Image (cartoon, rainbow, N blue to C red; front, side, top):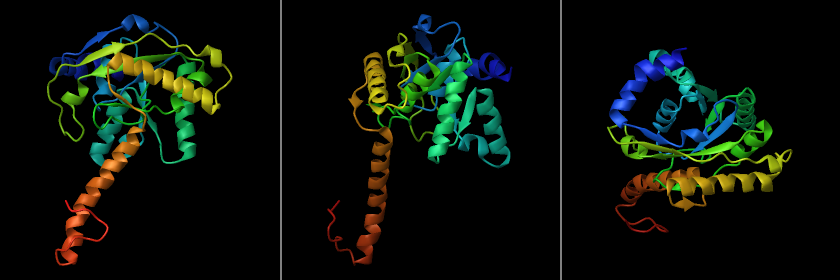
Length: 252
């Protein structure tokens, strides 16, 4: 109940005012039955603006940390994300990852719409990155279609690192459902799951117009973090050596 109060009376009107979201392709979402909504991921706002614009409720798996933070702020976050239709997912182990898949499969079999970001994390630079095959495994086990969704403008409204979003025009485009019944019973086959995932990512590339990069987004983020850490550590190392350049490193 609180989900719809939040959507139509509390948060929804504010989001519509600030971001003027528009959506096309709503006819591609079935009126009933389970479907996996696979979206590109540009900003945290994606998980709020997309459900706002779809009449049916959408459930997104979310980081467990959103639900376990201590204190008053933590309780507020837990209440907010639960009301927003998100379910906690522990991503710290292989068993936790399987629990996440099982949760999504159960929701789909119960006839729900489930939102998922096949890239696994937000794009660090607006490009579309390699998809993870968990999406395909979920769709095969639940015997559910995958519907590609392209978000536009949320990265401008809510850039990575920004504390507060700023007004910006947001557009959402929903593609036609992709059926994979021809692969029925083949969940667990890595070749099949990769083929399905790549097909969905191709549709997302066509739908969004993003440049596709055949690398996982998390690796790009890790590499950037490592470079930044090295840039911070290097001046300290130079100081320890009396200002001389550290052997084996490049100046600058």
